[in-house]
Each structure stands twice: as C-alpha cells, then as structure tokens.
Image 1 (cartoon, rainbow, N blue to C red):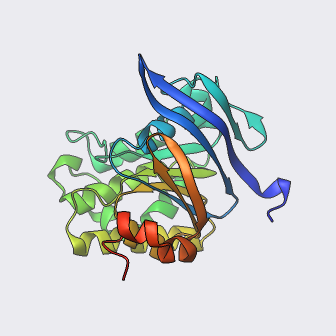
Image 2 (cartoon, rainbow, N blue to C red; image 1 turned 180 degrees about the horizontal axis):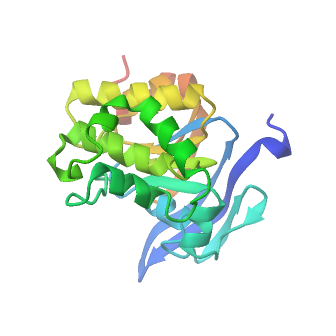
Image 3 (cartoon, rainbow, N blue to C red; image 1 turned 45 degrees about the horizontal axis):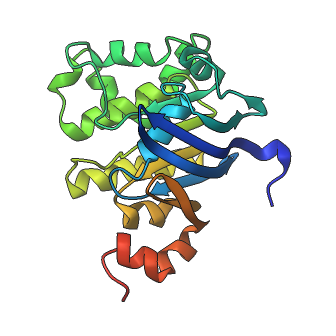
Length: 241
C-alpha cells in the first residue's frame, strides 16, 4: 500500500454533468507518485470528462479532487496548472501556425521558472525538435506533432501528466514511438494518468488501470490482472482467448 506522502491524486465519488446529461456518474480512483495509470473505456464512458474536471475545465456537481494533499475541486484552471498538472489533449491541440518553439513556450506560460532547464530536458528527450524548433508546428507530421504536444506539456515540470488518447489517429509505427516516449518518462519517475482506447498497448506499459463504463469506474487492478480478466479481454482486447 502506498504511503500517504506518495499519493498524488485522489478522486472521490465524482459526478459531472453537462446540462441534463450526466457524463460522469461515480468515479473513485487514485494515482501515486511515479505510477503510470491508464483509464480504459469506450467513447462516451466519461474518461475525457474526468480529465477536464481534473483541470478545472468543468465543475463537478458532486465529489472531491485531492491533488498533492489539497482539495482542488473548485480551483480555476490556471491555479491547477501552476500547482503541477498538465495535459496532452486529445487531438494534440498544438497551434499550427506558431513555431515549435512558440508552442513549447506556451507550455511554460503558467510555470515560468526553470524554463531553460526544462527546455534542455525536453530537447534531450526529443532531439528531433531541436532541428525543427523554428518550423510552424502545423507543417510537421502527425507523429511529430504528438511529440510537440507531449514536450509542451512537460515544459511546466508537471507533478502529474494527463494524456488523453495519445495514440488516436496515428499509424502503428508512430504509436510505438509515442509509447516508447511514455515508457521513458515513466522510467524517469514521471507520474502519468492516461486515457486510451488502445487497451492492449496501454496495459503493456501501465502499472495499473481503471475500467470506465457509462460514466463510472467499474473495475480496477494491476495491468496484468486487467489483461487477464475475461470481461476486459472481451470488451477491449479483441476476444477472450
């Protein structure tokens, strides 16, 4: 069991609605320091809504979000980002007409200290971006743009890195590259909470996972346990054999 000091994120009995639509009905989860945790579930299961709630982009109508010992449930987004949460959004969300470097600078907007140190760390992780730092981000390939999105999120030295469907729309060879990067970050001690429909790939690298269904966290366990669970295999891994 993790020590209290190891706990980075705790979500308790969370519910989130968009008007009359309840996107998240009941979510309980936790992420400990240095863990790579994956959220599995189909479209509409509530995974992305949860990430938006963690960032303060939507307000829960029930429950608590505890980050690094602080109740951030009602905090504004800029305070949440400054406290140590950043995201690689679904679809990358880079600004295509701005240069790679300008996109990276935006990643440090709320956390400007240690900019040079963070930039060198990002360039060491993504040497490709050194050569392309002056190019408009929109001229890069889809895989390269995903690397820019990850690098931008790392520019604030996050205590918790959120990633929303990082393999979406990418070719298999690029997905492998992205997950090699995620695995390297995990090995360096980065705490990661990731949503993913590519369950097989995510469970191969993650420590633990939660399964979402109809807005609720319905199952959790170590990645190997989930990989071997008959219902998980049937629903997300393409069969039970």
